[in-house]
Figure 1 (cartoon, rainbow over the protein chains, first blue to last red):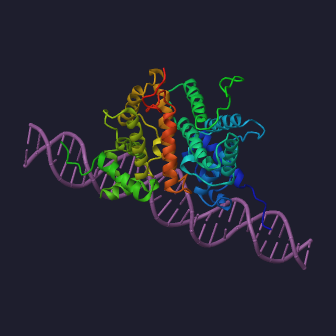
Figure 2 (cartoon, rainbow over the protein chains, first blue to last red; figure 1 turned 120 degrees about the vertical axis):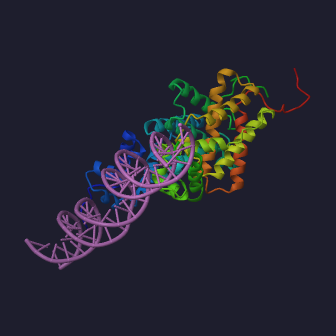
Figure 3 (spheres, protein in one colour; figure 1 turned 135 degrees about the vertical axis):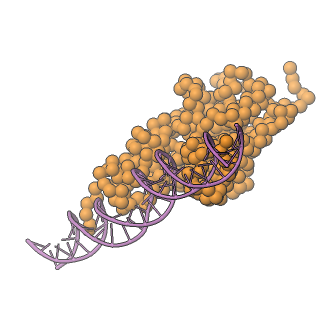
Amino acid sequence: MGREAQIGRTAILESALAIADDDGLDAVTMHAVAKRLQVTPMALYRHVANKAALLDGLVEMLLTEFPLPARQLPWDERLTALAAGIRATAHRHPGVFPLLLSRPTVTQAAVHVRDSIHQALREAGVPETDLGRIERLLSTAILGFAVSEATGRFRLHDQTVLDEDFAELQRWMRRLLPTPPHPPDSGATLA
Amino acid sequence: MGREAQIGRTAILESALAIADDDGLDAVTMHAVAKRLQVTPMALYRHVANKAALLDGLVEMLLTEFPLPARQLPWDERLTALAAGIRATAHRHPGVFPLLLSRPTVTQAAVHVRDSIHQALREAGVPETDLGRIERLLSTAILGFAVSEATGRFRLHDQTVLDEDFAELQRWMRRLLPTPPHPPDSGATLA
DNA sequence: GCTGTAAGCATACGGCATATACTGTGAGGT
DNA sequence: ACCTCACAGTATATGCCGTATGCTTACAGC
C-alpha cells in the first residue's frame, strides 16, 4: 500500500555522514540533508524521528564501520587490528567520531563490538569477572585517543609523533592483560 | 570613560556554567545567559566575541577548577590526586566536561595543568624525551574515562563499579611509568 | 556642566528544528 | 479497468537561535 519511497533511513544517514565529512558536524542540518537528497526537510521525518535520532544513527554507522577481525586470528592480533581499525574510522570521519563518546547508545552494532572484545579478552586469559572492567578501560583509552586526534587536541604534533603515541598506547594496553602474548625469551623458559 | 559595567566576562561564564549544570549544555544559549544576568542578549557581545568564544571560556573555567596539588607532595600522590580531582570536576559539570575533548584549547590554564603533570613525571624518572608522549596518553585516558562517565556511557553500571574501574585505571596508569613508586618488597632488594 | 566613550538596548534577519495540514500516487482489492 | 486509501512527500507556519546594525544612555575626565 502507499507509494514507493524515494529515500530511506540508510540514504539519509549516508548523506548526513557525507555532509559531516565534507563540512563538519555543524553542517549536518535537516535542511542540508534534505537538499542533498533532493527532498524537502519534512520528508526526512517519515524515516527518522528527529535530529537526535539521526545523530544516533550516525553513531551506529560508525560502529558498523569498525572492522571486526576474523575470529580465527590470535587474540592479540585481533585487539591490535580492531584498535587500528577504530583509529582509522576516526581519521575517516573526524566530524562524527566524537559522538561515540558524547552520545553513547546501546545498539546492536555496539554490542557486537563489545562482544568481539570480550571474546578476545577471554582468550587472553582475563577472568570472566574482570571482562567488563578491562573492556571498559581498553575501549575508553582507544576512544579517548581517537577522539583527541579527531578533534585536533594533538594538532600541534606531527602524524609520525601520533603514530608512535598510538604504538605506545597499544603496548600499554597489553599491560592491562594477564599473560604476555609472546614470551620474551621464547624456548628458554625456566620452570 | 564610558559607563560602569553591569556584567563581565567572568559573570557571563559563571552564568553559562550554572545553566549547563542545571539544564544541560543545549540550554546554554545567548538568550538564556543574558536572561539570567538580567540583560539583553546583545549586551553579552561587549564581553565575549561570540558563542564559540563563550564555550571556549567554559573549557577554560573547567581547567581552572582542576585542583593542582601542592608541589611538595610525592609525585605519585600528586598524579593520583590530580586524576581524582579531574574526575570530580567531571561529576560536578557533566554537561560541560565533554567540551574538554571536543573543543581543545591552548589556554594558560591548560598549560599549567600540563606543566604540573610534566613535573610529576620528571620526578617519577620519565626521560625528558618521553614526557610529552606519556602525558598525552595519561591525560587522554583520564579525560576519556571522565567524559564517558559524564555522558552516561557507563550509565548501566553502579557508582561502586565505576569507582573500582577508576581505581584500576589509576593502577594501570602507574604501569606507564618507569619506576614502581613503592618497592614491592621494602628493605629486601637484591643487588 | 560638557563631552566623548563605552555599555547596554531595540530591531531585524536568515537559518534552524519541527508541528500541522495538505496533495498525489501507486499497490491491492474489486 | 477502476476505485480507494495508506503512506511518501509537500506547503506553510511557528518559535527559537546567533548575531549584524545602529540607537540610547549614563558615567569618567576634563
